[in-house]
Length: 227
Ligand SMILES: Nc1ncnc2c1ncn2[C@@H]1O[C@H](COP(=O)(O)OP(=O)(O)OP(=O)(O)O)[C@@H](O)[C@H]1O
Ligand SMILES: [Mg+2]
Image 1 (tube, rainbow, N blue to C red):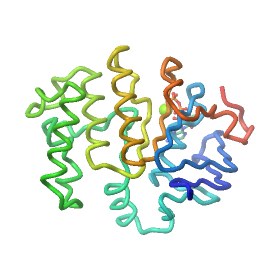
Image 2 (image 1 turned 180 degrees about the vertical axis):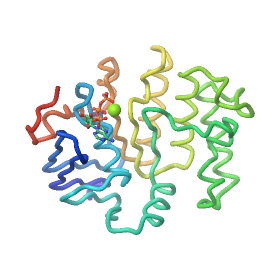
Image 3 (image 1 turned 120 degrees about the horizontal axis):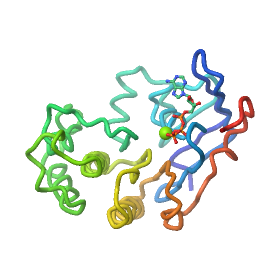
Image 4 (image 1 turned 120 degrees about the vertical axis):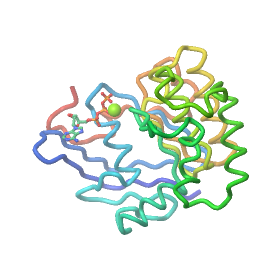
């Protein structure tokens, strides 16, 4: 089976930062679920942003479903991200002046999807499963942290993406919501043959994933070492 996500010989650093990342190889197959763990500051968010094409590597290749995002013009890579990837950001990145429902339907509003009816119905079902359907018409400001996080998860999954990247998606959830959320993401990955990559600190959840990767083992740069 050809991996859905292929990372090869990637090197990355931030300007004016001592942090270095060097990844020889990382792959994820369709339907496969991977948890990435590691101490704060070791590079989990940076790695997810590289895979999403939000950051560009200095060296190496990152291919999603046969497409090297780095080789596309920024508007094409943004369109690819919007239509094929579901991103759950560590800080949620909800649009504060849009209702929860409109946040979840953002890919539709951005005009890059024409399957309005099916997207709307998937989004509403997800909101129900995640227990936030009653907030559909209100602004995110009145939601708790955990509810905002659940809205961000609904937004990422509602487009039925090929690749889901989730950065600490359960960081603000109570134990029962945590398990419910991870189960939903994993079931969605298996059912829709999505590749799922989750950065997490939550050891309670690791048994649910097909693979658990310690980021310090993946990052071969030892300059500086992870904290
Ligand atoms: N925009 C930036 N500019 C410069 N350095 C950065 C930037 N973002 C992150 N870094 C540095 O890159 C390293 C990796 O940060 P990153 O946010 O990827 O870690 P993380 O594993 O996601 O941490 P956490 O578990 O706290 O979310 C850190 O040393 C951080 O200081
Ligand atoms: Mg992070």
